[in-house]
Length: 229
Picture 1 (tube, rainbow, N blue to C red):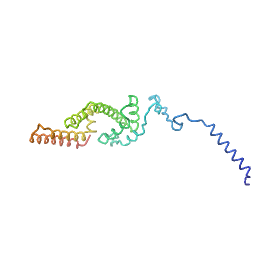
Picture 2 (cartoon, helix red, strand yellow; picture 1 turned 60 degrees about the horizontal axis):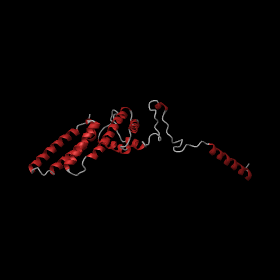
Picture 3 (cartoon, rainbow, N blue to C red; picture 1 turned 180 degrees about the vertical axis):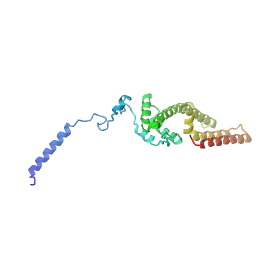
Picture 4 (cartoon, rainbow, N blue to C red; picture 1 turned 90 degrees about the vertical axis):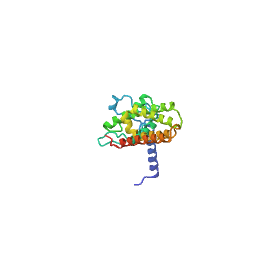
């Protein structure tokens, strides 16, 4: 039997009252992060990492770094590939991290990054990211002391200094894998420019010097072209 107008009005009023009561009695989330958005560290990690990962404790957003880490590649054995592409990704990651982290923040970044790759690759990434970050800090400090000039000899000396820092902080082999080909070309071009701009060389001396540089560069290229172990 269809409901009368009075019955419909009473039903609507009852529904409204019930709805208002439900809304008023629901617990309200605390200011800042809502209950649905708040991140809680898994209980199994609390003993090992007692400081939780939360927006209140760590004032940075890891998501941009996580997206960049997805660009990294693994080899057939599941280890991290270390090459020029890796160097480009590490550069982008340190820009996203900024170079003004304290030790605790840096260690947390490294820990989170290691979780993004499986097994041994995660540990390799942690060690590489930490070393690369310290290299970038050292490079930044060195840039403040090196002369800012377009002089070929000064530019060559500056590039050689940065190459030394790469080897110091990353190790000779890792620095070679990351930057070897690129650095070799940069140093070669700067060395050629220095020879060409040297007013103290005769034409014959200049040709001989350029020939030696070319031979050295070609020898380096043969080394770069060998398959990496």
